[in-house]
Length: 327
Length: 100
View 1 (cartoon, rainbow over the protein chains, first blue to last red):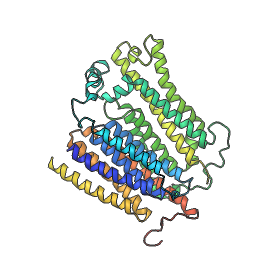
View 2 (tube, chains in turn purple, brown):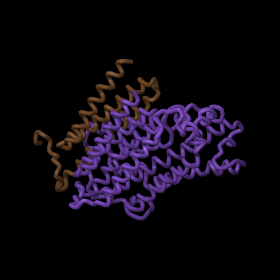
View 3 (cartoon, chains in turn red, orange):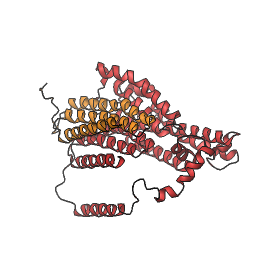
View 4 (cartoon, rainbow over the protein chains, first blue to last red):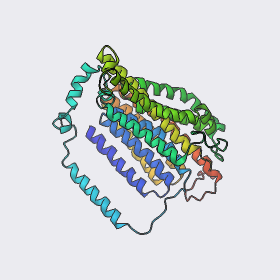
């Protein structure tokens, strides 16, 4: 059954990908990207990877369409047409595609228990998580504790991306330099449309509640800091869309946003330093409590909070960087 | 159990139709509606698959989509509201079918 669902979804995925490449109008490409992301999330879900699917759902549905449209508002609506065929590019792409296609023949069958990935550390994770950390969602245990260094790296990557966008586009008032008077000059918002206004205001508390649920329930169900951060950012983007950019920047000033971006990563790193001061290795949470299992759980909750704060504020800062530019 | 399979097939068919409309267009509104509908179908598909797999706790995901899908549509509305003021040098037709 999984195979049939997978074949169907992947076929649609290929069709929409070809549609994106062939679309000359960039708005059409953005719309098709939305469909691509929905299909991808359904695909992850079919493969039982609920955590990844939730990330794709939160980022794809809530944030990426909004960011792409924000970028599209600053550029011409059509892709520039190039006359000549670039044979070098075409040959490199074809060669890469053939190599990748050839490589898939070496892959183990889907769900094969003899596959190398199921022989390495996965059995140890599955056996030891109930003993060492005692939480039902092994993915959270792997992300937060066993591979804590990698997750710290990911948070720093997110932070770096945010800093990069702020350097390129700027965020008025973030570093005290520019004035905020001409924020989003010439843009209009949906504040005088009654239906989006009412529905948006009704939905917002539930989205924030859901973000908090995903944040603090990540040990039990699918979710965690990354997903919660994206959903929280989506709620605040909704606020900015229906109330206007200036109100959103008054609610959470850019200066605070920049500090929050760093605070999340700092919280994560400090947990590591704290465990070192308590006499264990970096990010070895067991020492945070007298009971090592409780210590592990505390450590995971703290670092997930750091991840959530960083991701939410970076996504929101990137949105504001696009949306606060006048025309 | 069979009920879920029938529902899944029906959702798949609707997905194909929505994707066709999103690819063919021709109006912006067709594409926006197609994407929105595709989102709704994804929510339904996730719910059906969650019950098919016997993992109703995975409904969290469908819930996330149901809550958040709305935001993308609002962003599209705002985008076109801002575009309308400019001289539309886009070759895409934004007038609704009834010509208002």
